Each structure stands twice: as C-alpha cells, then as structure tokens.
Length: 314
Image (cartoon, rainbow, N blue to C red; front, side):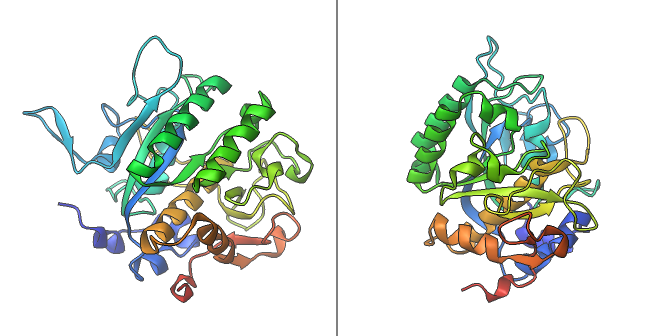
C-alpha cells in the first residue's frame, strides 16, 4: 500500500525541484482530507495510462477501484453520452497528475501525496466549453463543497472561455468567493496585460481568486503567458512540466500547468492548517515566492513560487 513518505524517496521532475517541493514534504506538508475541484475536460481513470498514477489499483473480481483519489463532480458537457471518467481532450487529466500523481517509473510525480481530486467535466473532445455547462458545474461544486470538503477549485482554462459571457463569469466567481473556496485561475496564454482586461477573472480582483502566470527555466515569462502588475499574483513553472495524459506521460506547458502547480500547493497548505481560511492560504501563496527581476512589473509579487521557506509558516 502506498505511503505518503514514499514521495520523499521519489526522483523529482525538474519543475518540482525548481519550487523546492521537498522542503514542504519534509515539514509534513503531505496533504490529507482536502478536496480539489478540477473544472476541465475530465479526469481519465477508467482505461487510460494515468489511472495508475491517480486511482492506483482495480479489483478485477468486483470491477471496482480501491485506494481511490478521484471522485465525481459530474459530467456537464451537454453530450448525449455520459462519460464522466473519460477525458477525450486530455487536458484535465494532465492537471490532475500535476497536482496528485503518485510516483511512477516514468518520472511523473505530483505535488500532494494525499489529496482527493473532484472531476467536474466541462470541456468536450475538442476542448470547447459552453458557458452554460460551466455554470452548471459551478452550481454543483457549490452544493458539494461542504460535504466533500472541497477547499480549492482549479480553472486552467483559455481566456476565450471567460469572454463568452462576462456577466455570467462574474456571477460564478463571486459565488465561489462568497462560499470560501480558493479559486486558482490560469492567467491564460493570450500574451495580454490582464490589468486592462474586463472579462478575465483577474480583472475582478476578488479576494479568494489567485491568478497564475507561467515562467520558463530562465525565470522569464513563457512566450505566451499573460501578465498583470496588479491582477496576476505570481508565476510558477510552465515549461515541460512532467505530467500524464490518458495515454502516456506527456509534459504540460503554459499557464494551465503553472496554475495546477499552485493549486497543489494550496491543497498542501489547507491540509496542514485545516482551520485556516482561504484568505489565509491566498496570503501565504503570495508569500511563498522568490524575487525574480524578470517578473518585476509583471505580477503582483514580482516573484516565482518557491517553497524553500515554508517551514517558517505558523
């Protein structure tokens, strides 16, 4: 049976070394009874490659899974076929692996040894998302959040999604904020200054929304990452982030990968400090950075995620 301490023995992919994740694990930031909602294209655990990382084993006699970590939020894709644990697009599965993949021989390792991942499937096979489906998913998430102890919601979505109905987006994000859920939002790969955006959640400046840009190995923004001196809080690795698609170990790129990394760290903080609020976690995520000259004027903190000083948190 898997033990959380096994993560300490794992050979780290580059992005986890970059953020000094072992500094957190060595301080017993190992996760626990925390739910993370992944609002995306699904989390594939039935037939795909990622199943071994995310839902470990299957009892062939009863056709059931045990050591379970992925749970159903729902399939909201307006499809005639109900396939909640099939990820035709592959993106949501990669986000789940970045957050919570257990170590494997392929070099894929997640951030949170113990976490419960909730699958809210809103994107269809070509990655398209209808705003009504997104609204339905958020409504279900708000109903489930207390019973399932969901503390973090990841929205690693294209900016195009937010532009479809700005009023509906603002209503959704305000409802999540009022519920006490920390929403981690990708800044998007649209090469924009989000300080000037009226449609992206960054422009709403809600207290429990944290917006994440992506940096490369040289600590500059990735070529496509959006930014915002007043609206994008920090950057995280967004180049060649080790992950797993439904069919193979496949690296993830861009602000989606960066946001998933920050969502994983948020789960570590909630698990270690369960009585703390989302506002407290939001503040500490912004403090867990190292100053980077290339990011000055590009993010609120001017820094990149770094857990080297996590032991100082009380």
